[in-house]
Length: 339
Image (cartoon, rainbow, N blue to C red):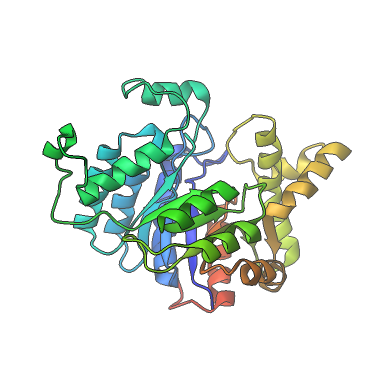
């Protein structure tokens, strides 16, 4: 069966403060580790009242320290916000402390609004526009030490220098990201949960055009999807109502904490809003284990996904853990019963 992983946004709800959301992430990671999930990735977002963690590298260290087998990584570090040397140093440190268990996932977007992005970058070089490729190249040069002769960075070493960078993954939601990942020979993770581009097309292009590199010998494509699973379809639909209302508000630019099921069910939806929710459901898989598998299995097969990464954002933390437990059972990865 296809390996399973977790993508976590450290979701803040109307009943869960940001500090508790961070502790919930640590608890969920331990739960996923016991269940046999392959990796646990943490996202980088800034100035969003719905997301508690702006620093995945800090959370990676905390989670890796209290888990045993699961790989822990970034999903991802938003490279435009950071000097490549800083990224190299921090992830080399993580790799030194937790050898063979760290992933470095990189994103092209800032993960925030324009004003916050400016605040994050104002002490950097001040360049405008999309300089992701330049930053990616510089990041790899800190590993390969192939700066041109006479380059000032030849005298700078990313410490600790006796460990390699962790495996690099490029994240994306478009055909460009798939093409770039294939061309440079790195791992690729496609964000179906918010992409407008076709997941099957992006994933198959990546596999068919992958070029072996010093980073990877073979392609590895991760399909990231949003799932809400419960024992019954009725219960899953009830839990998903929070995500439905949250997505509706996000489409209006309202990045609020995740509402409760009661608030979502009491909301006076217009016909247009209900239609919008129905359209958004193409990116959210809801139901019992049997129902969800019927929905996602064709996509997994068609996209040739080597791995499935799941984001589940329910109001109740216990319901979120149960969703991942049921998913592990139906995928056949469960190692032992988790508390």
